[in-house]
Length: 480
Image (cartoon, rainbow, N blue to C red):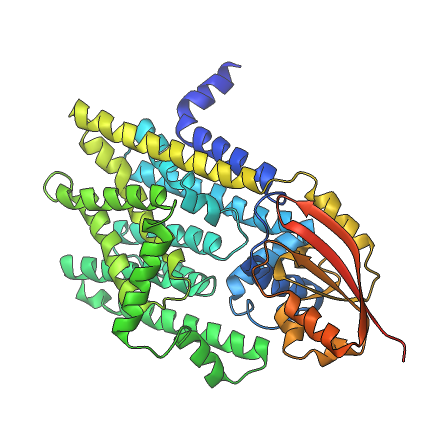
């Protein structure tokens, strides 16, 4: 008992946020918050890899198979624990746990107090933004964890006199990050600027090839992404390059910039996400006033805004909302040093502590409400009922969310057959519709009904808080 008390007393700064994180995530992985399109988009190629050693998306028909780092990571969980929504999301929770311990290590390097570490870890892992990142089976969870490792390796690279050993680790992490999600290039770019700064500052000009190697490593890593997309989707290298380099449109820089600003305003400023967005921006902005008081706080805040500028200038508006998880790494790192710097002024310090505590409480409350709204403890039983009514080998049409109910079955996305309905117009097939699917799911059924080739029977209708009203429909080919 004394050992346990001693353990808790000495490590409460990591135990408290870790326990709260697990309580908010683990009990609700597969019974709350419906599966996102992207979750099956990335999980399907990982499933196909462990069963056939190929990176093909057989659910949606394309994509999700150009990021080998994430695919291999996710497929290892499917191989060991089986393929399910719970397993896919558990892989992200594990990354959240790893990120907590990486950050704790970084905070200890920064000589932060236990209370500062507690507040900063809670500010990070219990914010709505990161709770979502480390819940859903998307590559951001792995990419952010790898970015934290990259920054930690960069510290040791500088501490050890621009060590070649740590440069090699940085280059390997560059490949892993780029092939987990290219948005991680924000942190790679910032790392390159830091590397160049210290080479010039210390007049180690013979090491100038280090940032050059980083650039070459990044370009080669990105070309590998292009190559994998080409091979996995059966398209030319040129077509794959076009997809990667021009994901959104051929609009001008100004149009794309305005679009990214609009995404920021709509997604963060004019929504409930402002309770995560605003506190992180406040920390970064406050850090700019620490140029004389604490240079480390100022530098980290500067790097945060540098990453924001790079994103607005270079990245596509597509999925731009996800980039803020990378910016806010720097506000998280700046926070414990900032708290240490203002501790002498009790009024400012306790005001900051209250601000951080309220931010954490509000984010936990908001996330809990979202979880409760779609929580259905019986969703697993309901899904099994659906599966039991579908014979093996049957063709099934549904939204991507329902791929997880039985990955071994031939479940295809609406668009997969809608582009070529001839594949099912001459055969019996099943359709699963659900309320939370925003696609025009009835169009396919209506087009079949207009042709008067099938009888349409609703076999099962269930209601759940996760997916709303769900129908299992059988379309049988009429006898001629």
